[in-house]
Each structure stands twice: as C-alpha cells, then as structure tokens.
Amino acid sequence: ARAPKGLGKDTIAFAVGLENGGFARELLQEAGSIENVQKVFHDKMRKELLPIQQICVGLESDNGLQYLGIDTSLNPSLDDGGSVAEAFECLDEVGVFGHPGTMSAAAAVTTSLQSIPDVKTTGYSGLMLPVLEDRRLAELDTLSIQKLLCISSVCGVGIDTVPIPGDVSEKSLASLILDVAALACRWNKPLSCRVFPVPSRLAGMATSFDSPYMCNSSIFPVE
Image 1 (spheres, rainbow, N blue to C red):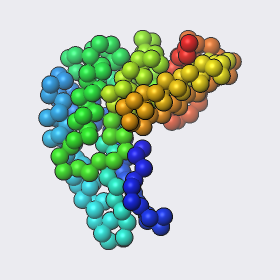
Image 2 (cartoon, rainbow, N blue to C red):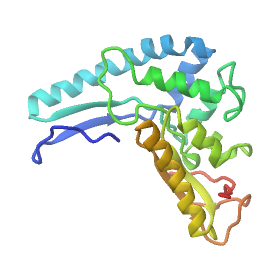
Image 3 (cartoon, rainbow, N blue to C red):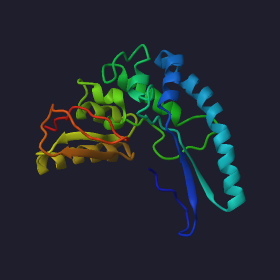
C-alpha cells in the first residue's frame, strides 16, 4: 500500500502478505480484553513471523532481491473460523462487531500489528474488512458503509468489497469516494473504495454471486 522509496527501475522487490483469520481468532480469544491485545499480538505474532522473515532475508541476500517486509494485516478467509469480524467478537468489550467497543479494539489491534518487535512491516499492516470475503461481516444487518468508514479511521482498509444498489447515482458514488479520500488525506494513510454496484438489485436485497472467493450479503444503501 505504501510505495517503496529508493528502488531503482530494475530492482526486483518482494513482500509477504498473510491470510490469517483463524490465527486472529486464536489471538483475540487468548487476549479476551482490549488491554491484553498488544502483549498477546507482540508475543505470538513475533514468534510466527520471525521464521518467515528469516527465509525472506535469505532470499534477499542469495538472489539480489530487495525484501520490503511483511504486511501483518489481519486478513479473513472464507474457511470456517476464518472471519476477522467474528474474531473481534471474542473480546469482552466488543460483543457484536460494529457495536460500541469495536473502534477501540480495531485501534488496539492496528497499533499492535504495526509495532511487532523485530519484524519489518510494510503495506497496510492493519485490519482488513472486505464484506464479501468475511462471512460474519456479510451476515451483520447492523453494519453500514458509514460504520465501516468510521472503523477505517483507526485501521484500514476503507470500503472494501461492499455491494451497493445497481441504480446508485453518479453523484452518490462520487460523494462516497470523496468521503474515503478525505479520511485518507486527513490521516495521511492509504484507503480504498471498492464497491460492487449490483444490477437490478436494491438496498436490502441479497446478492447472488457464484464465486469461490466471495460470499453473499445484503446490499448496502449508499444514501
């Protein structure tokens, strides 16, 4: 997400990303409370990531590559137990993702992910909340675009894989993109706005995607 500086045009660089929703659940179950998040994440993620980093450093020195780091982001999968949102609900202060306590938890997790001792980080290193790639997010009828945007103010990734009505107006879509851009500029952080207008579907109706890489959810209103 952050463009590497000082790379020549012929430099081959690489970074590592994670799919770790199940591991996130383990970590947050162990933490139990926001106050324990940093210690658990620093201890357990450091232990898991240092061997990966060692391999990357070896590749860098042996092959003339440049190792940029590990994006430590919590990234969901569609596997059972792979939801990041569901993992957050293991914390006493959250209960239901998107309810009070969620933003504080997201801030604590993001701060921890960006400061893991001895691990070189890159990219967002935050919290990924793609609605159509996280089964718990997809089933929450209390979630909204504005809630996702609020949570993004303390983590990442912005508005990601959110289905919206196919008849959304150009003005409404432009206004949403402006809101995401304003937040990104205000806090000097990269955010995305990846929405899926669904033809012939209105807010509240269900999507019917047939993909092994996405689940289905209700369509979010934009206005």
